[in-house]
Length: 190
Image (cartoon, rainbow, N blue to C red; front, side, top):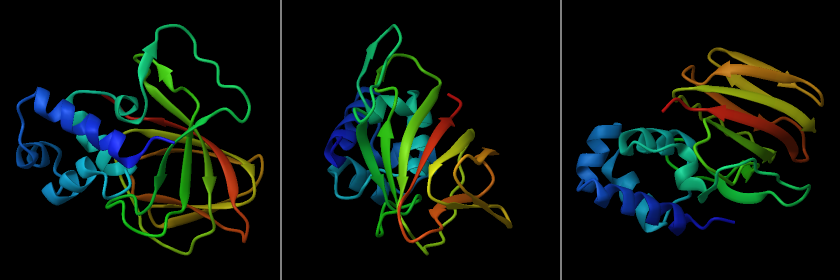
C-alpha cells in the first residue's frame, strides 16, 4: 500500500520543483493550505477531490501521485495482485472513518489518461458529496452500493453500472451490511 507520506513526498517534490510555497499551491488549486500541509506531512489520508485539484495545479496526472510512472507499454495486473494505493476517508478533507479502499489496476503505466481501480466499498451511512472535473464509470462486482448523484440516489447491485460526470456532486457508499466491490474507471482531464 502506498503510504500517506509517499503521496505527500511527491506533492512536496513537485511543488518545490515549481518553486511554489504551500500557500501559492493552495491558491492555484483552490484548496485549503492546511490540507496541503497535512497531505505533504502524511498526517491525513489522500482524498480524490483535493488530489485532482492539486495535480492540475502542478501540471501532472493523478497517477503521478498515486503510483510510479515507469512502463511505456501495456500493464498487466494479475488477479489479487493490484496494489492498494489509498484508503479514502472524507473525499474533501481526508478525515473520517473511511469507506473506500482503492486498488490500482494500472500502476506504472506511463502517460495514461484514465485511472482504473478495483475498490472495496465498506458499509457506511456517511453522506459527504464530492465534485471534481472528469468522468467516472462504475461497475458493481459484488454487493450493493448507493450512488448519490446530485439530488438523486441510485441503488446498484451486481452487474449494474453507472457512467457519471464527476463535476456533479456525488458519493459512492456501501448499501449492504457487508463490503461491496466495484470496478471504477476515473477520467480527470489534464
